Every structure is written in C-alpha cells, then in structure tokens.
Length: 297
Image (cartoon, rainbow, N blue to C red; front, side, top):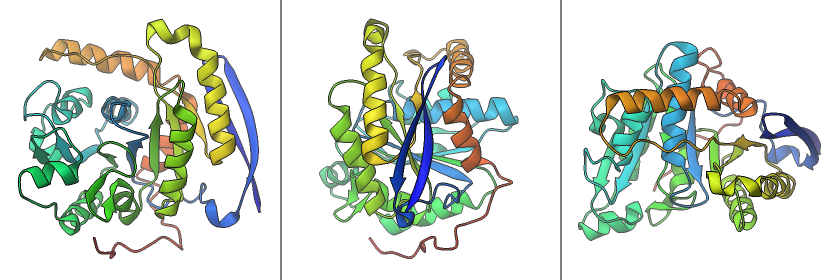
C-alpha cells in the first residue's frame, strides 16, 4: 500500500491537506503515462471542458511562448464556424487564430447527440482505429497535445469504444471537470473509478467555476471537493475561474478573454503544476508498464 498526500486548493488563500492510502497498482502519479499531453474529460456534457481546454492552450502559450496542439476528435450539434461550435471556441479561446477549425476537430455531426448516436443519424460509423492513429500522429509532432473529449468519460465513439478507451490507447493522463455543487460527488467518484477501470492510471479532478450568484455556496464546493478526493482517492486541483467566453466573433473580445483567463488560472497553482508535469516537452519518459496502442475497437 502507498500513502499519498494531496493538497486540495479551494480559494486563493486556502490549502487543505487530504491524506489517504491507495493500492500501489492503482497509483501512477509520479510517472504519468505520456508526459506530452492531457485528455480533458468531464462527468457529463456542459461542464466546462471546452473552456478549460482552450484556456489551457492560452495559458500554456503565455508561460512557454509556444501554443500547444489542440484536438477534439468529434463534435456534434453545431455547424462549422458557428460561435457555439467547440471548434470555434477552441480556436479563438486557445489563441489558435492561424488554424482552421477542421485542423482542430476531426469529425462533426449535426445532431446534438453522443458521437455514436450522431454518426448513426447520418448512417455512418466512426472509425476508432483511424482516430487512434490520428492521435498517435498528433502526439508525435513535437508539441504537447491537449485533447478534449465529447461529453463525459463513458460517452461512446462506437459500441465498445469510449472517451476513456481513446485516452487509454494514447496513454494520456486524464483531467476530469466536475460540476461544483449538489449532485457532483456520486457522478465524479463514479467517473474516476470508470476511468481507472479503463486503464488510465493518472487522473485528476478540477471543480467547475461558480457563477456570481453561486459564490455564497463556495463552502459547499469545498466540502464536495474534499469528499471526492477522499472517496475516489484522486487529487482535486482546485476550482476553475468563472469567465464566460464571448458569444460574438470579436477578436478583441477573445484576446481580452484569454488575458483574463490566463491571469485567473495562474492562481490555481495545483492545476498549473499538474499540467506542467504532463505537458512539458522535456519530460518525455514513459512508464515501464504503460499499455500498448494496439487494442481494437
């Protein structure tokens, strides 16, 4: 058994220590599988994955001087170029103005459904092996890779191939966005356990932001984070800032959003440290027991 000390960041002035014991076979925190990227997932849809993924890209560019690669394998329910499309928000939120949306998102479907269901509506199926090969190719291009999934951790690309399947095949650490208030404990603990069962050893949780009218419930968010850390035996890295993205195409507004986000995210020190340890190009070693990339859909 291995004892781990995790510090949970709740507010700018509050660090709280949580201690727990994990079986050694379940713990691979010091040796992340692939330290050149991360997979951003969540406990469900509309939890803040796109804001976080684009914000991480903007933050990384601000601290290193170079933008990371950003990839969302599938988006659904939106049109290319629409201001609510994940491809659009990742491009402008991440400061990737030189990229085409199709460079960031591989597949797009019209129906606002899971990738599996949305593809079926158009009488096609998603080639999971091709997605896996594309992920491997993107990882090999020399830049840290930020991957954003669709929906929650168990959302399927195909009948037996989910967001976690792809993250595991690419050997990427997973960052799970959890909603901060009532109902989050069971959803988040379940998501963490599912991700581990699917072969992802390096997992962390970050709580979603609180809207201004929710700030009086900040203590509830803190309690939820502590319970999640203890029950799921997972690091909870803090709470995201609440900075809504622009809804209109205005480059100045997007530039302002990125500046605000980078400043706010920089204060979530545990999140920044966790990301640095997994996206730093210097740190390229793999775990000796990491899984192969050859599993079939």
